[in-house]
Image (cartoon, rainbow, N blue to C red):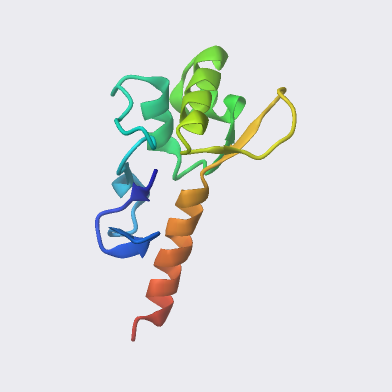
Length: 118
């Protein structure tokens, strides 16, 4: 899964990038198996708030997307199973997830901007 902005930064050999606005982020692909989540699914709604919450728990997501706790958990699990998120906490209670490729995209964009002549 690659989260892209609309511009031209290369992450893992794929060109992504954009004007640097969080609202410009969009999923370029959902899972290694392909496809996108349904527009009204918890997973799709979570993807839309990932730029503001690149590290999140079900409680964080519940507040961000206005969903029930169980729906937030299900959406996080779908995205973790698809490789979009990675569980970074141990155990099954209060799981924390990180959007690693979002951090990679930000780091790549920052490096590109730092190398740009002023």
